[in-house]
Image (tube, rainbow, N blue to C red; front, side):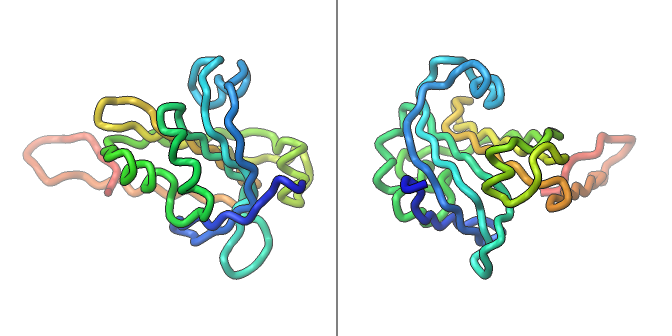
Length: 171
Protein backbone atom coordinates (compact mmCIF):
# COMPACT_ATOMS: atom_id res chain seq x y z
CA UNK A 1 0.00 0.00 0.00
CA UNK A 2 1.02 3.66 -0.25
CA UNK A 3 1.44 3.77 3.55
CA UNK A 4 4.43 1.44 3.39
CA UNK A 5 7.88 2.92 3.85
CA UNK A 6 11.34 1.40 3.94
CA UNK A 7 12.51 0.58 7.47
CA UNK A 8 16.02 -0.67 8.20
CA UNK A 9 16.06 -3.08 11.13
CA UNK A 10 19.44 -4.01 12.62
CA UNK A 11 19.11 -7.59 13.87
CA UNK A 12 21.29 -10.68 13.87
CA UNK A 13 20.08 -11.25 10.31
CA UNK A 14 20.68 -7.64 9.22
CA UNK A 15 17.21 -7.44 7.72
CA UNK A 16 15.00 -4.86 6.02
CA UNK A 17 11.27 -4.46 6.43
CA UNK A 18 8.64 -2.46 4.60
CA UNK A 19 6.59 -1.10 7.44
CA UNK A 20 3.23 0.41 8.25
CA UNK A 21 3.26 2.59 11.37
CA UNK A 22 0.20 3.50 13.43
CA UNK A 23 -1.04 3.86 16.99
CA UNK A 24 -3.84 1.48 17.79
CA UNK A 25 -6.04 0.34 20.63
CA UNK A 26 -5.83 -3.41 21.14
CA UNK A 27 -8.98 -5.35 20.36
CA UNK A 28 -9.77 -8.72 21.92
CA UNK A 29 -8.02 -11.06 19.48
CA UNK A 30 -4.84 -8.98 19.10
CA UNK A 31 -4.71 -8.37 22.86
CA UNK A 32 -4.87 -12.13 23.42
CA UNK A 33 -2.13 -12.78 20.84
CA UNK A 34 0.10 -10.21 22.56
CA UNK A 35 -0.72 -11.46 26.06
CA UNK A 36 -2.19 -8.06 26.94
CA UNK A 37 -5.54 -6.51 27.88
CA UNK A 38 -8.03 -5.24 25.31
CA UNK A 39 -8.23 -1.45 25.26
CA UNK A 40 -4.50 -0.81 25.80
CA UNK A 41 -2.90 1.66 23.38
CA UNK A 42 0.28 0.66 21.52
CA UNK A 43 2.34 2.06 18.65
CA UNK A 44 2.53 -0.59 15.90
CA UNK A 45 5.05 -1.04 13.08
CA UNK A 46 4.51 -3.92 10.66
CA UNK A 47 6.01 -5.23 7.46
CA UNK A 48 8.05 -7.86 5.70
CA UNK A 49 11.56 -8.40 7.04
CA UNK A 50 14.03 -8.86 4.18
CA UNK A 51 17.76 -9.58 4.02
CA UNK A 52 20.01 -6.61 3.26
CA UNK A 53 21.30 -8.50 0.22
CA UNK A 54 18.22 -9.64 -1.67
CA UNK A 55 14.53 -8.96 -1.81
CA UNK A 56 12.84 -12.27 -0.87
CA UNK A 57 10.96 -11.77 2.41
CA UNK A 58 12.18 -13.70 5.47
CA UNK A 59 9.13 -13.18 7.65
CA UNK A 60 6.32 -10.81 8.60
CA UNK A 61 7.17 -8.69 11.65
CA UNK A 62 5.07 -6.49 13.91
CA UNK A 63 6.62 -4.42 16.68
CA UNK A 64 4.43 -2.89 19.38
CA UNK A 65 5.67 -0.10 21.68
CA UNK A 66 3.77 0.55 24.91
CA UNK A 67 1.77 3.77 25.34
CA UNK A 68 4.13 5.45 27.87
CA UNK A 69 6.90 5.40 25.25
CA UNK A 70 4.98 6.75 22.23
CA UNK A 71 7.12 9.90 22.08
CA UNK A 72 9.88 7.73 20.56
CA UNK A 73 7.99 7.61 17.23
CA UNK A 74 10.10 10.28 15.47
CA UNK A 75 13.33 8.39 16.29
CA UNK A 76 11.89 5.22 14.76
CA UNK A 77 11.48 6.80 11.33
CA UNK A 78 15.02 6.00 10.15
CA UNK A 79 14.80 2.47 11.56
CA UNK A 80 18.44 2.33 12.63
CA UNK A 81 19.05 -0.28 15.31
CA UNK A 82 16.71 -2.54 17.24
CA UNK A 83 13.64 -0.80 18.64
CA UNK A 84 14.24 -2.23 22.14
CA UNK A 85 17.74 -0.69 22.14
CA UNK A 86 16.37 2.74 21.12
CA UNK A 87 13.74 2.53 23.86
CA UNK A 88 16.33 1.45 26.40
CA UNK A 89 18.65 4.32 25.53
CA UNK A 90 16.01 7.05 25.16
CA UNK A 91 14.09 6.20 28.35
CA UNK A 92 17.00 4.81 30.38
CA UNK A 93 15.29 1.41 30.56
CA UNK A 94 17.10 -1.70 31.69
CA UNK A 95 16.09 -4.74 29.70
CA UNK A 96 15.70 -7.13 32.62
CA UNK A 97 13.98 -9.99 30.83
CA UNK A 98 12.84 -11.13 27.41
CA UNK A 99 10.18 -13.80 27.13
CA UNK A 100 10.13 -15.73 23.87
CA UNK A 101 7.15 -17.85 22.81
CA UNK A 102 7.04 -19.86 19.58
CA UNK A 103 3.65 -21.13 18.42
CA UNK A 104 2.66 -23.25 15.41
CA UNK A 105 -0.08 -21.56 13.35
CA UNK A 106 -1.63 -21.71 9.89
CA UNK A 107 -0.22 -18.97 7.65
CA UNK A 108 -2.74 -16.08 7.70
CA UNK A 109 -3.99 -15.08 4.23
CA UNK A 110 -2.91 -11.42 4.46
CA UNK A 111 0.58 -12.34 5.68
CA UNK A 112 0.87 -15.08 3.04
CA UNK A 113 0.14 -12.52 0.34
CA UNK A 114 2.94 -10.26 1.64
CA UNK A 115 5.40 -13.17 1.92
CA UNK A 116 4.49 -14.71 -1.43
CA UNK A 117 3.58 -18.05 0.15
CA UNK A 118 0.30 -20.01 0.15
CA UNK A 119 -2.19 -19.22 2.89
CA UNK A 120 -2.98 -21.95 5.39
CA UNK A 121 0.40 -23.70 5.23
CA UNK A 122 2.24 -24.40 8.50
CA UNK A 123 3.94 -21.33 9.95
CA UNK A 124 5.61 -20.37 13.20
CA UNK A 125 4.75 -17.26 15.15
CA UNK A 126 7.43 -15.96 17.50
CA UNK A 127 6.39 -13.49 20.20
CA UNK A 128 9.06 -11.62 22.16
CA UNK A 129 7.99 -9.63 25.20
CA UNK A 130 10.52 -7.15 26.63
CA UNK A 131 10.35 -6.33 30.37
CA UNK A 132 12.12 -3.51 32.19
CA UNK A 133 13.65 -3.74 35.69
CA UNK A 134 10.23 -3.02 37.28
CA UNK A 135 8.69 -5.96 35.42
CA UNK A 136 6.74 -3.66 33.08
CA UNK A 137 6.36 -4.58 29.41
CA UNK A 138 7.65 -1.86 27.08
CA UNK A 139 7.83 -3.70 23.74
CA UNK A 140 6.32 -6.78 22.12
CA UNK A 141 7.33 -8.16 18.75
CA UNK A 142 5.57 -10.75 16.62
CA UNK A 143 7.24 -12.52 13.71
CA UNK A 144 5.47 -14.98 11.43
CA UNK A 145 7.77 -17.33 9.52
CA UNK A 146 6.80 -19.82 6.83
CA UNK A 147 7.24 -23.24 8.46
CA UNK A 148 10.01 -24.26 6.06
CA UNK A 149 12.04 -21.06 6.70
CA UNK A 150 12.52 -21.28 10.47
CA UNK A 151 14.90 -23.25 12.66
CA UNK A 152 15.34 -22.95 16.42
CA UNK A 153 18.29 -24.45 18.30
CA UNK A 154 18.78 -24.49 22.06
CA UNK A 155 21.86 -25.83 23.80
CA UNK A 156 21.49 -26.77 27.46
CA UNK A 157 24.65 -26.73 29.57
CA UNK A 158 25.05 -28.43 32.92
CA UNK A 159 26.77 -26.17 35.43
CA UNK A 160 29.65 -27.89 37.25
CA UNK A 161 28.76 -28.47 40.89
CA UNK A 162 28.40 -31.21 43.44
CA UNK A 163 25.24 -33.21 43.03
CA UNK A 164 22.63 -33.09 40.27
CA UNK A 165 21.57 -29.64 39.08
CA UNK A 166 18.98 -28.61 36.53
CA UNK A 167 20.05 -27.79 32.99
CA UNK A 168 20.02 -24.10 32.11
CA UNK A 169 20.07 -22.42 28.70
CA UNK A 170 23.50 -21.28 27.59
CA UNK A 171 23.85 -17.51 27.31
